[in-house]
Each structure stands twice: as structure tokens, then as C-alpha cells.
Figure 1 (cartoon, rainbow, N blue to C red):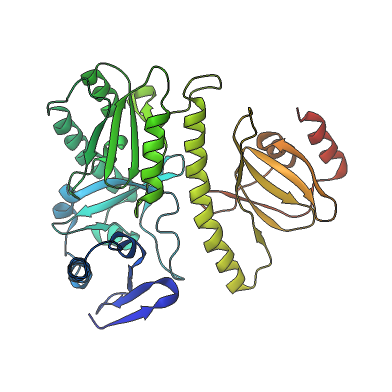
Figure 2: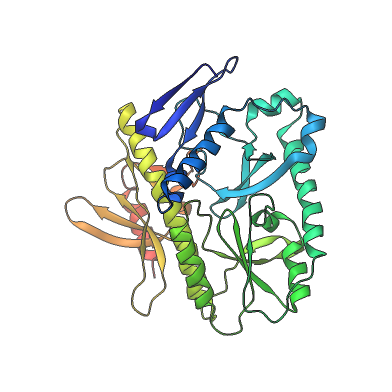
Length: 372
């Protein structure tokens, strides 16, 4: 190591290694939250371990030696996006709504996210890296299914010590369906944080107690992942559980999906607003809102204000607001998108849609006429 620079605005330390093109960043927010209630001695040990991991030289793996160490992991869609200018985030791809798949190198004391520079060093493609990580996961999934599974329990907790990659099992095609076969019926799975996987038989009546437990865990976890419930879908692939309106589980599942969307857009809104302000770009970063009328359907809302350049978050409905006269009406997102041709801005996840002034009066009238 050549030097380390404190960056208080980012709550981070930039670490410069000899021969590296740029610094590695040690972000402190998670460990700050995780050690908030521990003793001084425990906190010092956690920090010392973190420094040892960051100070160690990067492993000199070749493609052949690194292959068996690759693991896929699930992370929030905004993970790794808020970094210093010029930072190349880890390789990733879409996995589930508001979640993405990344690849890590499993190491004895930690995991290292695979970045584009490492892929270039190995002389392979990003697709090969993902495929190899998935092959390794398939072996782990088979091994887990061979273990004895307890029957008759309302909730199974799989708590990861850092080596088991339990939440990654949701990425293994067929795994959740096979768990259901061992437990005697469809399974509802929750991954409220990076290291916790909760499994329960799909309830016949209410699922609210399970959603409440996962939601509270999600809100309190330093490394939260998702409050959404997941089930086995077509071809055994894991999908978000989204029962239709009128189903006993509909409201619980809908609220969980909204909580995840609100959480991800909230973090993105703050970061984008700061970046645009620093760059002097005059654009409003729209806030995703949520509403649940008494006896009505919960939904997310994006506000389109006349004459204001805005990056709209993806929502269930769009509220048209005039800066002088206030709210005019709300319309379904799909109706507006079809009429005005909303296009997602490049490189933003979750997606944003740039709008300026309202559509032409005749188009706005058509949209309003189509509203229920």
C-alpha cells in the first residue's frame, strides 16, 4: 500500500496500492451500523479484521485457479452504483425486481466482488464468469438438497456464517421447487438481508405474520436485501410472489413489493440529486410516493409537474400536477407511457424517465379520458 486517504463526505477511506490504476474504497456505513451495539473491544476487532482484509494484496488468481472460487450473489439494484467519479462498478445483471446478480471470489476471510478489470485480466467474457459462478452454485444447491429437511415446521431459518451463500440459492433453477417437494408443498421464501433465508410452507389463509417478520428484519438489517416473498415459477426459476387482487395474500405481497421499490428509489434519489447539483444540471429527481386509500388498492405514484424537467421513477400511476393550480388527475403508468412514448434514461437502475413539459393538450385530454 502507498497511502490511505480519509474521505469524510463519502464516509470512506480511499486505499492506494502500488501499481493499481485507481484506489480501492473502504466504505464504513455498514460496519458502523453493525457495531453500534457492541463493546469497544468487539468494535476494535471488527475494524482490525476489516483493515487486514483491505490491506492484503489482491489474490493473483488465474482463470483456472479462480474458477472454483466464483459465487453468484443477490444484491439490491442500487448496490455499488454510488461511488466516486470514474469508479467501475462490479459486473452485474438483472435478477429479480429491484435485485441484481453479481459475482464474488470466495476467500477465507471475505469475498471480493468481480470488477471488469479482473475479467480482462483473466482473458474471459463476463458471460463466462456468470456461467461459471452459476455452475458452482448448482453444486452447492444439490448439496443442500441432500441434507435432511425438517417437516411440519412453520418457519425454517437459514442463517449464513459468510460461507454458505444461502440467499444465492434463490438463483439456482429448480432449488426452491425441490425444497417444496421435500416439505410437502409450495414454499414461500424471504431474503430480508444478505445472510438470511427464511422458508415457510405457502400459507392457505393469511401470510401477513411472515411478511411482517421479513419486513421488520429488512428495515433493521445493516445489509438489507428484500422484504418480498419468492416462490418457484416456470421452469423452476424463482419469481416474486404476486398473487392477484382478491387473493388472501395479495395485500401483504403488494405492500412488500412497494416497500422494496420505495427503498431502492429513495437511495437513488438522494444520490442522483447530489450528483446533478454538483454538476450544475437543472433537473428534478422525482420521488417515488406510495398511497393506500381506505378500502382501496395500494399503489406507487410518480409526480409529473408541468414545466419542470424531471426524472420520473417507474410507478403504478402518474399524478399530473400544475405548479399554480395543484393536482389535476392521475393516470396509469402504462397508459401515459404508450401515449407519450416514455423512454428510460441509460445506465440508471432502478429506471428513470426524463420528462419536461406536459404532453400536448389534446394528448393530455386523451389520457384523462381513458382514466377510470
